[in-house]
Length: 361
Image (cartoon, rainbow, N blue to C red; front, side, top):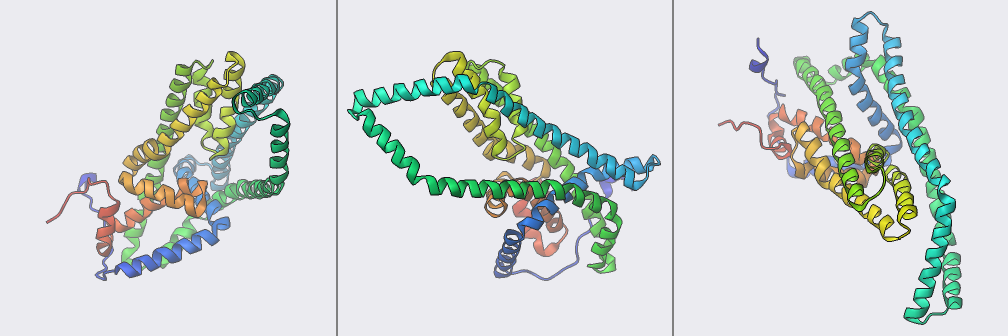
């Protein structure tokens, strides 16, 4: 049988689900995901890594490499890649610290110039300005403590994720046959082929997701570089692509990667407008990446329409934060695969699709 003649097997279910039942299901699942995010976030990343590394492990096993060794090599490769990104982040931060003394002098000069401007323009004395700053600092003490506590919690959670994700990924790859058999047992025997087909296509969907993400990083790197080149920042392509790569680390990556071009532009041109222009470039590119580039590049490869991608990104951010904005995209692709094969979910399949499905009479 040729590949073009194959047709997806559908779940034979004649039951129709009401809108109320679907909403109740969505609410229950959302609550479970929200309160169980400490477990589900690293587990979801591990599934993502497992699906991506499965073809690599399978290929090495066909070459005679034992399963455990193949898994170890694959996980080690991913770990080294993640470590390289973290190392790049620390290099950026250390280079910024080397420029700190020059920045501190310029910062003091700028603050002094601003104070003189306020005195001349608004007739507010230096004593009143100093008093206002001191009161603000005193009042913000509790806020600073709260931010410090939240930062410590975030760091501890991230450390937990970094430890557990490789462990979960290795165990999922090692016990993949056991997990597949357990999944098959949840459904009647006649649906085994359909479940197997969905698993295979899920692996391909995750592969397409990663290809889409690589395109996103390439486009974002080019946009960053062009923006920095226009405003005259030295080495714009270096800074632009470093910032693009570090966006893999949500929020923190883009902030750290922007410090060095901000410092270089300030030192080079001795003007506050150039650092502000750098911030504007990164802010505009981040907005384009979140709401245009990412939905278009990733959504088109997953065959999901852009509107649903944007909604899913926002919902993922609400439930799981930055991790949800990444993970909920492949989740929705799996839901679409199931909906495509379930007659009672035909409406959901059409809603998630990008309009390329052939209409049947």
